[in-house]
Image 1 (cartoon, rainbow, N blue to C red):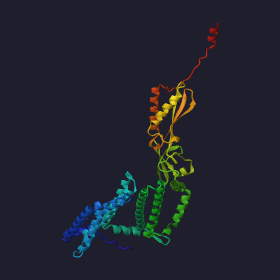
Image 2 (cartoon, rainbow, N blue to C red; image 1 turned 180 degrees about the vertical axis):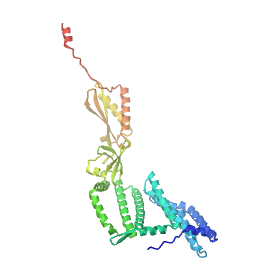
Image 3 (tube, helix red, strand yellow; image 1 turned 45 degrees about the horizontal axis):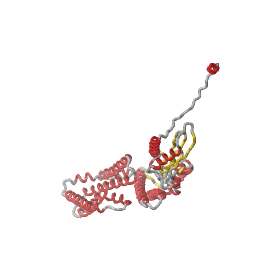
Length: 434
């Protein structure tokens, strides 16, 4: 039978010492430590800056924990001195976990905000992490933490020669979560550093940053589990089952994951390219691990699995050059001076600031398409370099310019016309012949 865990409550100890003069010495140590920490923070804050953007998050995290860290060091030093002539330092013992909890909350919240994008779900994670840390602090000062630890240690099972307890699994989950958060923070720092190398191709930088994130996450798990006493050989059966699962059920996920790296490395599709895939046209705004995000010119976003960009035909409108051709159809009446209409259409196209004029192969041209029922079909072809700014607004501006010039030149834009011949009835023909 396991021995009962003694009940050790820091709060009751502090209440017992409330009438003791020694408590005043401890309060004085706390006040001096807080005052010294505040003065040092005021002096250090202007100096805790870095001109390098990649290290700004680290300095920001250090600034967040500077006060509780410096105060903790002061409390620890003061406790050592006070213990030379005071037997009980319960107030200082209570301040140490309090400052540690405050440091933990600030570090975790800063790490979460640095790793993830700001959104409503992030606030839920921040509150959950803060409640867990403060809950552990409350259990510690009330003396309940050793009892909970003993109860979780008693709930155990054996697998072969290994013994697993609820406390060991909880400890492993906590260490793995901390290691994963640290790995994500390191990967984010690596990504920021890589994105600063503007002389390197963007796709290559994205591929390296994603590879770094994968390596950091794998290393985090491989280091965290042995740190809490879990042998990795125990996970061999699970690893084999996971491999079979990937081979059957997760093959699409694995294919999309590998396809993402192939796209980033061969640079056939790059961020900012205008592509058409699966009848979807848009700008490549993100290349993620599993999917690529296409942003259409009307603002809608399409999630395209990376495998489709490898296995299907992709029309990249800006692979070798950013120039994009825009065709503007126009119809004029048959009695129109076509040379004049051509000149006015060219003038309207060249007047727009987005139209390319400095490249002979991409200069505006007018084509006579065909002779339709109601008029002659012409087409103005112009080239632009900034297709991501939209094409409908360009067409609208040029159409307005053509309309004004045609109205001034009295060039008719015909509407559909039909010539109807009325056939006379036999009775009418007989009367006319008689």
